[in-house]
Image (cartoon, rainbow, N blue to C red; front, side, top):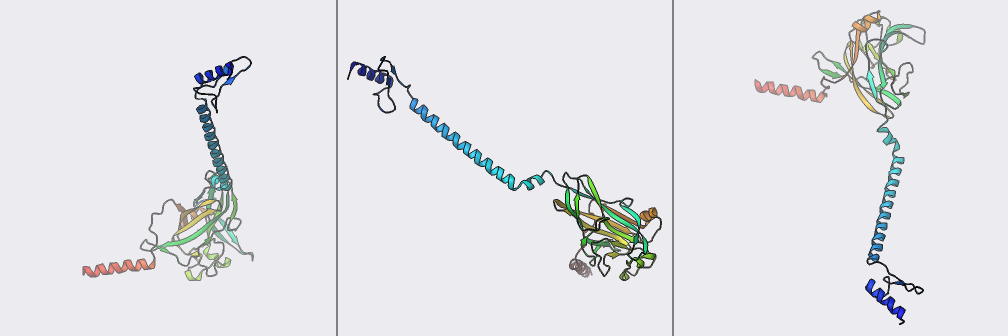
Length: 304
């Protein structure tokens, strides 16, 4: 070993702690005799930096994968997500006054006519999106009995109501903050009722008693959509293709007499409103009523 090489070895032993082998070696400038040695702990520093880079790469790949899945979910369910923030909201109202209720003559294809009073529901969209294919469904009808209990009218056919002026089952579009009228029913002058083919023989009404014909999408041949004087509750469902169904109960009071004056007819002849809260008991099934009467009979027998 030459003097210069032995000097480099001694330098490497003193600085690096060992001979110049493997990764821990000294760099010797043969021209000028200077020695450049790495600092102690450089290998562990490089290794820790490599681990940090690997961890950062894993976190970046994980974030990219999660972002891709989120974007894919948004693309697939974007309509459902959008409907949570933008959707139509349907509300129902009616008042026994114009423009909801008013007098209008009914004219038949043969040219005859009869005076009548129309009752119409106001369906309004208070949401922030357009309601599509809106419909109003008459679900069931109840009548108040003499004992103030509500009885289900079994002959009433559950069916959709007609949209005013159009006569369709569905209304294509109702924009936000706009509304449309839906025909609930009409009352015809009893003296001219038979002329427009709205006489219901099963009701046995005189030509002085009014009747209410519900404006269903189809009129049954047995005239089961026509009812006589009384207190009624009509349960309806208002829905649209992109809106949640709304259930309401319409209170109808048909007194019986007919008045040619529109204002008096809407004041004394008929009344209609939307119940904000159903306070009356729902009609019981015939079996439940039979069990109730049977219990009363057993209790009376035990008392005796």
